[in-house]
Image (tube, rainbow, N blue to C red; front, side, top):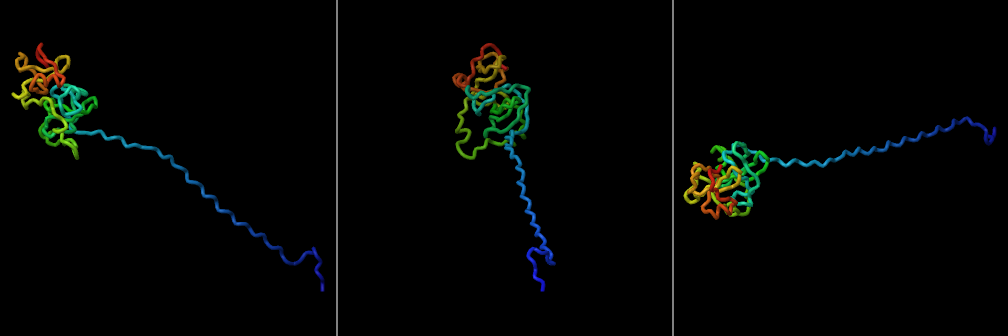
Length: 201
């Protein structure tokens, strides 16, 4: 018998190397999508447009007082109607300069069917408009005249200044009023001055 010699070749085939399993590919991080802050624009209130009949003040509140005047509307312009007071004496409008405020009803040409559809101010809680605002003066009658209880006419002169016209003024009947006052003190409290030179516009 042949004794195997150490280091001699043998008939057994060498063992095949075991292939290493490839490592799974590393999960790629999902690209981060930039998040952009997006703010919804505040909607601008809309409503029907009507014509301005008489130049008048735009007020921050539905009452006649010197400290409530914030802008004006002029005859021939158009305004957007937003709301009305419960008594229909004032309209909340936005004018052609995008100023929103209150104007006396007699200064606008509002068809009755449009006036009926206008909403009232949102008053879920708290006092009513009548409780919040104690108005000075009142709106003219439907024919543009002032009632006997408030005979003094409030209007604007040719310099667009607020003036009041007394019943004994020779131009009283020709004056188109936008507000009526009971007394001179009331008119002056609202920021109107006595007009004595002629007809106010």
